[in-house]
Length: 51
Image (cartoon, rainbow, N blue to C red; front, side, top):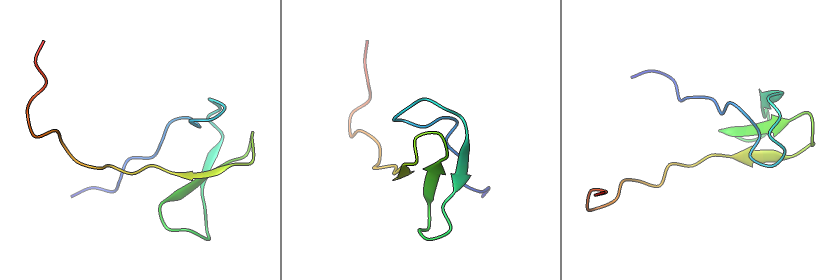
């Protein structure tokens, strides 16, 4: 399996200047708004999405 995908932009300010956070595993730091955040996958829906 490959490495986890990196976020493309900050969910708070929308900037793309992100770096992995050295202090927390899986955390990212935004150098534009000085926030540290994580992205977590919770799972799939039990029933499929229908249109």
